[in-house]
Image (cartoon, rainbow, N blue to C red; front, side, top):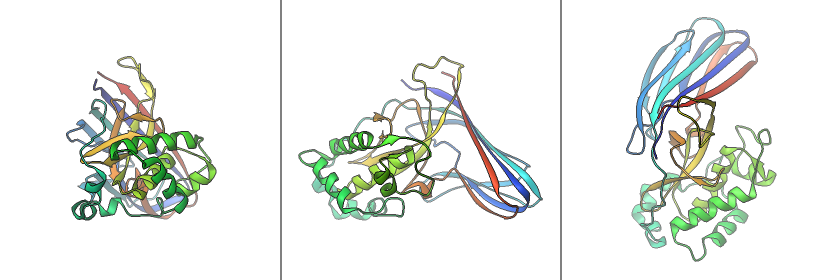
Length: 280
């Protein structure tokens, strides 16, 4: 059953000394496509800034803004209403021979290659081949996600925003970003195109209408096995009505909710909250 939810994502920055100017990009607009419907979205800043929107290479809506007045605080508030989709089902169209075809390798080459967050690793590639044995591609995706869920312990603070899949694997701990990166490494090692998804997760399956809960920025994966479909390895569950898709990419570097540069200022403090209300 699909849901309608309101999301308020607030990010606050405080600087020890005035920032003279800053240039920023926000990927905070949920996707509007065949799998979810974006009803309304606005991204506002305090102090007020000049902003414009564009769509990046991966189809994600980006709000770009810059500020040229000295400031010691900045707040970015993204407010959205989204109608989510029913549960994703595995797509069982392509066999291994199809994934190895020249057309697929050419079309999805960027989503099969290694990156700094998702490097190659012989030990993990061998694990992926073992999990793959005797399974069709879609079932191999499920097996990999289940294995990652079993191997890692969810523990904030063990890894950081720059940690790779290997870092999480060595620690055997991490957060949703790490679960997604490790899953991508395994899937790409066996030739399944896979991409990183950032978004939100409503944390209460039985939430009452009108109830606001402290939600989460979340990450999961989508795999291509004849079509794209998503799965959440952190919770070992299909993507469903509680998941809100925002950005797609090769790894976290392509989907960071906020990034930018600034001049002036000293060290900064960051506060982030995500409030989600089920409307229908």
